[in-house]
Length: 343
Image (cartoon, rainbow, N blue to C red; front, top):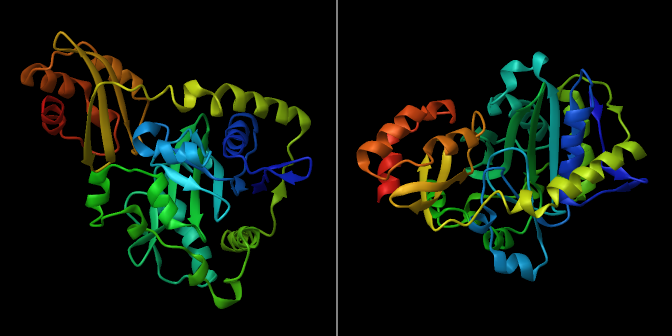
């Protein structure tokens, strides 16, 4: 098991865009036949899922006021606010050795739960499609995707974060909030720090990171990590990825065009938003976004729906012909989507 720490010239890197670039660079370029672990701690930023629209998910006025960046990750899921009061871990698993892990968040979280139990959090449990909870409140969320022959997965741990600020900077779909039986983001999350064994409750975020890694080795019956240190030539490629992708406006903002017709629905796979332009009663442009984890690229589905006339019969038949089950992890009701778009 390899460990890659985000260090450059001996100093820890906190920039959220660079941290994502390091992970994705390693997954695409390091041909290691073992699991790779990437711990990271970030400067304040909002990280959105690949299929999300930042204009919908984020308080743009507060974002600008606080000079906080938005970073789009390569996996699906929802928007999260990250800063130096939380600790995060990403993994690269060889797919051939871990085929059953893909999409199985309960299995992915199993060693994490054991680690948290070992350091004093006895009542943590897996919940929903990709969360960990304590007494009904979220302490961690995960994301996962398949990149070539590697499973790319990660999770965040809420250690000592400011939930009032999270409630202000994130603006999730109200249907998602209502589905949880609560009124705000801050009502459904809690911190780990004061729930740890007393001996750990005054740990800094870096001490917490080290404690987790130590326990993670024990849980996986591994004596110690092998370390891979990023070279100057690695950094040249990483810097190129940052400039061309993770800090590129076209990737962060341009993937979410502002269309005039927008409808959202809460489903078993998450919130799905349909953004459309309509010309002469037909779909002329379409973007599908949300906090879901699709089975494959949605571009094919978007192209398939282009030109569809917005009548009950034609839209419903087109949605059925599209075979939505090929794109989403659970069955989507075509009639429900049709009625949403025609409402």
